[in-house]
Length: 292
Image (cartoon, rainbow, N blue to C red; front, side, top):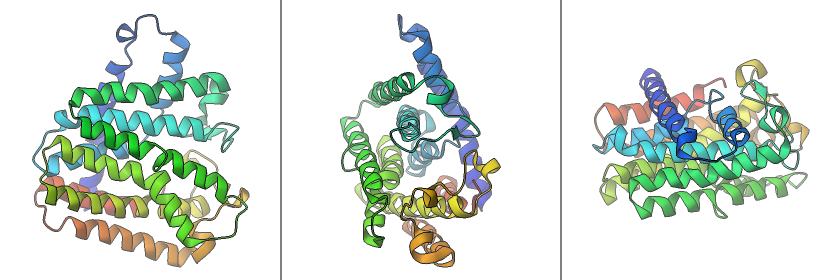
């Protein structure tokens, strides 16, 4: 069953990489500094799984749409995800030296260039999304990335360091920092494919459960993962005294909750049929059984 999700990831990666390379063609941005363009490419094509773009494409196809209809939104969400990783790695944030097995952008270039490359990826993400011609999708992505979504979640993450453990606070943090972008990826795909309100609600529930499964698994991998496979150091959360699911609940209960969240995601798709819906179900299990 996991194979269908992995096939979707491979297909989405090929489609989105080609589309993003075209969007960063310097002929589209006459006069743009080459160093800035090179810095964006360095991080954008560093070998990510393209998980969020796969959700956009999978969500669109699950409601009868095409990958081509979802492609601008898939590019946009990956650009925003990459910008967030660039900024997360900065000395003022997590101060990481490695990302996907090679130096982080501020190490490979410099801190100022990394900040500006992240800013530019965030900006041109909406240039890409404009091709969908759907203002609801623009608004949804802006809110998922903004103060009540990813950026707000990052603030909560910083505030949680060296704070008393709090499960409700941790759930809120994860829903904003990680879950919001995962949820909106599925929703934008569904909107691009013309989903009915009922189907959009089902895919929203799927995205919410999947986002929780994803983050719990990330917390587990920070404890148990192989740094070579993950392309970054393990044990960073403990070193920063961050509250995580394993630190609060232990590994066994964390694994149980991740599996239950994956099951909740699969159950949310009970009314959807076809290969595309099966690929989304498969991705839910892939999320909790991955090793990187």
